[in-house]
Length: 270
Length: 270
Image (cartoon, rainbow over all chains, first blue to last red; front, top):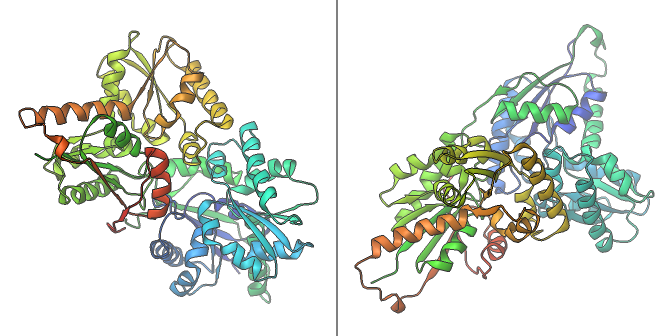
């Protein structure tokens, strides 16, 4: 048998944290597509995001995938149903798994969600968590993505910025929140820093790790009954980007914690 | 007679600092176009930027303008000749005026240019300044735009970040640099903060103010000989944006220092 082929789609490099979490626990061939020429999705209309995301999803399907992971909060929030209609393979978004894990670990039934402006504006996490009977306070933290992309992962400036955001969230949130949900693909890189400045009673849940868990469940259920002779196979990675492959390589190496040598350029038009 | 009609084009709200500088010294009807749905331009190819910018330029021309200001460093660096070909009105970019003023005020013939990653990558300012016999050190400061957009104009975090960037630039630059050129439309909002942390011998030149000076020269030369009965007229502003008009309004009010009540939505396609 062959390993499953998992497509991963994101507007940029952030989804590589989801790929990183999956690669740590799932043997698969991974095809990662970063629509770097058309990011950010967060400022675009739902129609535009759906058009871009379905184009990328079909491109990955044409490469031959068994499963598609939408590792992009904006695309998940704005276009998941349209992506599901556009391809024949199962599609897993990044919102529901994060909300599910947050709900599972919360005792007080209350969470603080930190994310980009666009994700907070979509209220996708609020809806998912309220659907599980939880109280939610959403806090936009627009500086955290640029700080991560600048490489200031464990920098005093980033710690100060995170303290300001979390302080504002704590002041405004339901007092009993016991979960901090990292609802942006860039934030897992800040987990050690955030753990340091977050009260000990708060559990930190991240959507990347949660999504990897959901993907593993699907892969294991579809592979059940097949011969598990994966030792004959080799896990592999292919990377596609719509903009500069050099910038993608540099960031990808940081996000993945492994050298990314080859990125294939794809042009999907305006 | 009527006041001149000045079109101002930018990928987003940053060009409003150029509009602000012009409005302070030039009586005109201003038409500002922010291509907010397709920003950032800095990560896109020269062909894509040229296509977007010429589309916006033609849109402004169709509204009736006498002069077009490209208040966007990426569009100026990557597409100025193509924009000039696409419209019949005179076009003024933002790079040459900034470089000219920097050259005029420098005694040591050496400047530090701070800008976004994309502008530094284009080396448009380096070429313009070297063409005037100056030495240049270009420093990318990617966190300054998000800090300005977060509204942290005079915030301790922003001061710390600017100190880090300017410290790195000073360590790497020709020692005798006596000009700090703000080569990003967002940076004029940081001028008081930057003045505080920059050595007294360094002059701060910003492209927005420099471009306003260049536009005033053109307007005055074309109006010479006409009756200067502008008191009969009223200066006015119209704003066009390709994405959310609400977000544009909020940022525009901050950037312009005046209330922006009405923004017209324009769809120029993907």
